[in-house]
Length: 346
Ligand SMILES: [Zn+2]
Ligand SMILES: [Zn+2]
Image (cartoon, rainbow, N blue to C red; front, side, top):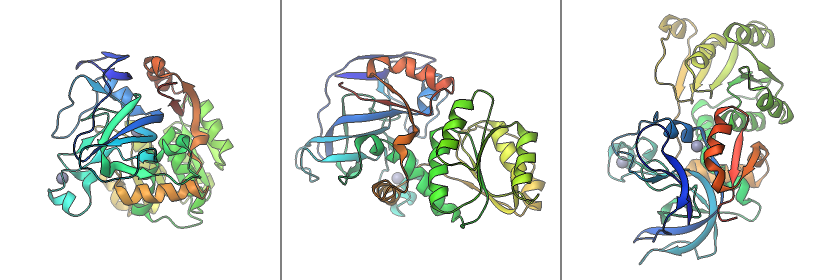
C-alpha cells in the first residue's frame, strides 16, 4: 500500500512509498482509510521539532492522525463493529493502568500511544488501530467531516474546560484548522462578537473565517490586536481568548487582549515564552492549557457534525493525492491551506 513515511530521524527524511498492508493483532482492527487530513504536527515531524512523551518515535513511521474509513477486519478474538462499518478513528490511547488513565484522562498518560507519532499513522491506504479507537459513524456524517473528529474533539474539550457563556466576546488567534473549528463551535455556543486574528500571509485563511461567519477577521500585530480587542469590547477586553497559532507572539497577544476575569487558552505548540505574571494576577485571569481529547469528546464531536452545528468539511481548502503528501507539507507551511484532505487509494 502507499503511505507517507518519516524514514529516519533528523530534518526532512519524509517520502511517499510502498509498504506492506498491516495485519491486526488481538484487540486491533484494520481500517481502509477513506479520507485523511494533514495537520501542523506533520510540519513539526518533518522539521524534527516534535518532542514526544516517554515512548520514542519509531522509524520508519507512517504519519497522519486525522482520518476516517471503513472497517475491514478485526484481529483474532476481537469484538467490535461489523466489517464494512464506516468509522471515525480516535488517535490516542493510554496505558490503561496509570493514575490519569484510571481517572479516564488518558490524554495525559505519560506512556500514551498516538497514531502517526508512536505507532503507524493514517496518511496511508490502511491503518491498524486498537478496536476501542473506532467510532461507528451515523449516516449523516460524511467521511470528509469525520476526518476532522480528532481536532474537533480537542475543540469540544476546550469548551468543556472553559464553559463559555452566550454573549461573551471571544478572540481566536491563528486562522488554521484548529482556530476555525473553534470559530464554528463558539458561534454555535452563542459567543459574540467573535474576532479572528492572523498574521501577514494569512489573508486567504482570514477570508475563510469571514465566510464562516466571524464578526471580524483581521491581520494584526500585537499592538493592533490590542486596539481591535478594545474597540470590540468598549475597552474591557475579550472574555475568552483562544491561542491556536503556536507562536510565542500569539501567547503574548492573548495575554494582552484578554479582559479582567477572562479566560485564556493556549492550544498552539509553543515551547516557552516569557510571561508577565503580574498581568495574569492583576487581570484575575484563568489560564488553561488543553491537550488532545478523550472518548466523550469524540462522541460529542460526532453529535455536533450530525446535527450540522459544526460543518468541518468547509475548512477543506486543498484536496491532494497521497503521492503528493510531501508538497502538502510545503503548502501547509506557507499558510495557504486551512485543511489539506487526502483520499488514499484514489
Ligand atoms: Zn492534528
Ligand atoms: Zn496511562
